[in-house]
Amino acid sequence: MSSVGKGITTASTAKLLESRGYNVTCVKIDPYINVDAGTMNPTEHGEVFVTDDGRETDQDLGNYERFLNKDILSTNQMTTGLVYQTVINDERNLKYGGKCVEVVPHIPLEVIRRIKEAGKKAKADIVIIEIGGTIGEYQNLLFLEAARMLKLSNPYDVAFMMVSYIPIPKMVGEMKTKPTQAAVRTLNSSGIQPDILLCRAEKALDNKRREKLSIFCNLPKTNIISAPDVDCIYDIALNFKKGGLDDRLIEILRLEERKDNDGLKKWAELSNKIKSVTEEIKIGIIGKYFKTGEYILSDSYMSVIEAIKHASWQFNKKPVISWLSSGDYEEDSNKLKEISNYDGIIIPGGFGTRGIEGKIKAIKYIRENNIPFLGLCYGMQLATIEFARNVAGIKDATTEEMNSKAKHLIIHTMNDQIEKLKKENYGATMRLGAYPCYIKKDSKAYEYYKEEKISERHRHRYEFNNEYRKLLEDKGLLIAGISPNKKLVEIIEIPNHRFFVGTQFHPEFKSRPLAPHPLFLGLIKASYDNKIEKNKKDIS
Image 1 (cartoon, rainbow, N blue to C red):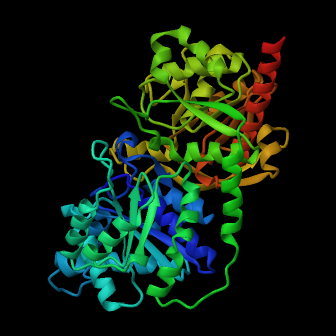
Image 2 (image 1 turned 90 degrees about the vertical axis):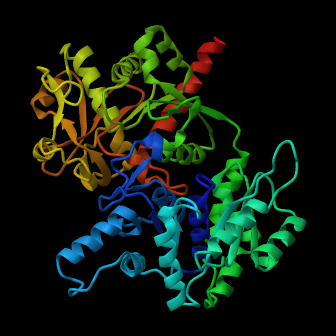
Image 3 (image 1 turned 180 degrees about the vertical axis):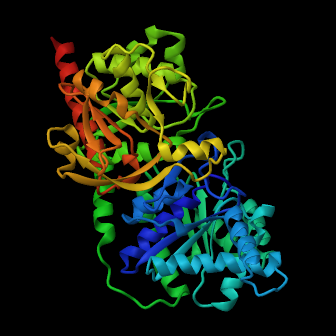
């Protein structure tokens, strides 16, 4: 079922095999018709993750990067839409030599081609392919057929792992295996027998349930791996290690034994650190992509959340993250006072006009009260608008995204985006992927990056309007980072503030558990200093 943990399972398995000395990469297959994830609402699908080479992908690719500590290429995600688009384009270009092009076998063959291409580009010994959605869904049939065909032509090079949920109904109080038995038989109907069964549940799998699954799902007991809930996702690879998952896969795939590279040693050290930290640091995220009915959907900002955690753990702090709705500040300005309860604030990226004036009010409060602040993409743009309005005196300063006919467009459409918008060409047309940036040495950014030239990932259509650059600089805004041609403002700061940094790029995409991002380290350090100062005032 959705959200059972296939992505984290894939990433953890990859980490495990990497620690055994193999070069591993991961591929995500998504069944939707969208060509990529860029046009989907984050509250429906979760975060859009951007690769270095500029593809808008599923958030699972972010997990792959964080666990493997390596960049994943755009070739490592495919969708139904992308696969069909490729096959149709190839047919139009006569690449099938006049053959009748059919759904089977040509669609599965294109899937297999893409899997092999991803493995080749990554120079991988092992490619782990995650098929999104569920086994019983109609839209997954072609991907399961591709998997079956791949196994048929490479019987000893392919292993199937199935992630299945084992419920414990509250009124029954017993772990039930029948849903998983039914799911395995549904998979069998596609011509696939799982080699490994990963059993997701609130608790660890007991021996009686393992025996039942072994008998009715046709697997050895040793190939049934318990995957209980954990407090931290970075423990999952360690749990799989205890369950012997890596040994079983090496045996099934008939891989040569390699020397362990101690990759799990630092992972275990991190896990122990996470469990031991007790001193809290309170970080508020002001956004709009997290409410769905009565529930909080934090997946919309998954990379931001993980980047906060990585930096906090580096300083031996336990992050406590709260979700603050910008719409509340539009309705009641008195609620702005709650921002002072937090040690630091982040305003992440986003699109549209909903809740924007509330974010601008919040930024003004943050700036005036010396609260550590990190603005990401839209957050940086809104911080620039707030400064223009309330420091530079341009009262009607705004962004073209809010009002295209306004007199003072502090943020406007990038030149190369104008024609695309006129043609309503939205998919994969923004400034996407990694671009270089030069940092001024007298800035907070340089203090934490410790280098003048950096590379960061972008996903935006609007930019800082250079017509206002000199005016805002004269009023005290520091342009801390610019593009090599000096035309694009990449980082803004407010000097003499504890920490007030806005980036046009998305630094969260490059944060890793064992290599936290410099700007998040800067925010967490400043937030802790803020906490200490607040505690001193409270005591006095």
